Image (cartoon, rainbow, N blue to C red; front, side, top):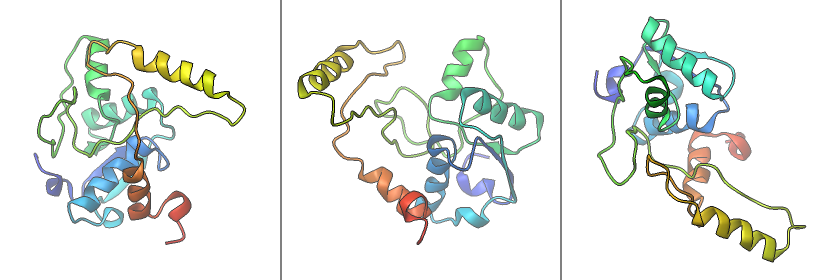
Length: 169
């Protein structure tokens, strides 16, 4: 199995049906490749949270055969292997071409952690927080804080999946 089409009618393990990186991004990739995510897998097993522990359970379910395929957030497999000091017998299916991003992935990239503020935070304090984050050095994996001036890809995915404020569609 190397392509997403090879996963049709298999059992999927995912963290939670409300998890953007552990479920929605994967379902969006199916849509972008012309598949109906609601009818693609024979069964979807949700672990029940979007935590790293739940993502580890997703990987364990794939390895044990409880699931044929799993969805975890981008870079989770690399983080898991680095933390454990061992390689896991899993692979990324439908891998996107290599680019400047540090990790293997099978979906489009979406903004990750997002910092926002309340209207009570002064513009000077907001500037200081932003400056602090942007001046932090890259991690050993090449991760760093940046600005996301456009969140339309998140909104478009929510529209395509008919979730959140678009669940009425």
